[in-house]
Amino acid sequence: MSYAVKEMFLTLQGEGAQAGRRAVFIRLAGCNLWSGREKDRAAASCTFCDTDFVGTDGENGGRYDSRGLAERASILWGDLPGRFCVVTGGEPMLQLDSDMVGALHESGFEIAMETNGTLPAAEGLDWICVSPKSGTEIVQRSGNELKLVWPQQGMDPEAFASWDFDHFLIQPMDCEDKEAALAAAIAYVREHPNWRLSLQTHKLLGLP
Image 1 (cartoon, rainbow, N blue to C red):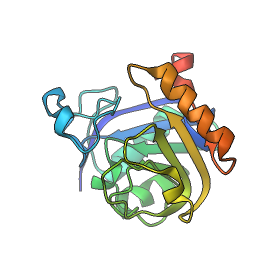
Image 2 (spheres, rainbow, N blue to C red):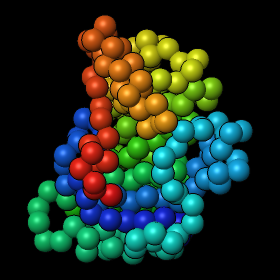
Image 3 (cartoon, one colour):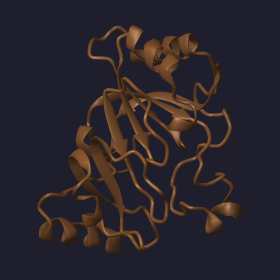
C-alpha cells in the first residue's frame, strides 16, 4: 500500500501531555470530517480545523510505501536515540495500518497518533490521543489522552469522564475570539480538577 503524506518534519510536540518532546511529525493527507476546502467548511462535521492536510505538496510530502516512509522519518530524526514520531492529519486512521506501524517500529520509533476518534485505532500504537468533535460518533473511547478543543457547542466534557484515558485535557480553540476561548478553558479546569489545560505551545514558539 502507498500512503498519501502531506508533510513530514522534525519539530517539538506542541500539544497535550507530551508537549515539548522532540518528534518527527508525519501528517497524512485527507480527513473524514472535512474536505479541507474552505468552501466546504461551514457544512463540515468539523468547522474549526487549523491544519492544511490537502494533497501531498508539503515538506517531504508525497507517496510512500511503509518502508520508504520509515526511512524518511529516520533521516529526519538522525542518529540520536529516543526516536519518537507523531502520526496525524487530517484523520490518520484513513491510512494508518499495521504495515506502517510495523515499519516505524522496526526503525526504532515510538509511535504516537492523534485522531478524531471516529475510526478505531490501529493495533500496536504506543500513544493514542483522541480529540472528539461535536456531533460525531466516537468509536475510539480508550487511549492515553483525550484532548478536547474548547469550547464546542453541544458538547459536555463530563460525558467523557467514564472513558478509558490516562489524561483528560482541555485545549482552547484557535478561533477569532482566542482570549474568550482561553478564559473558558481555564475556568473549566479550575472547576474540574480531573482535567488539565493544554496549550498549542508550537504556535507560541513559532515552531511548525
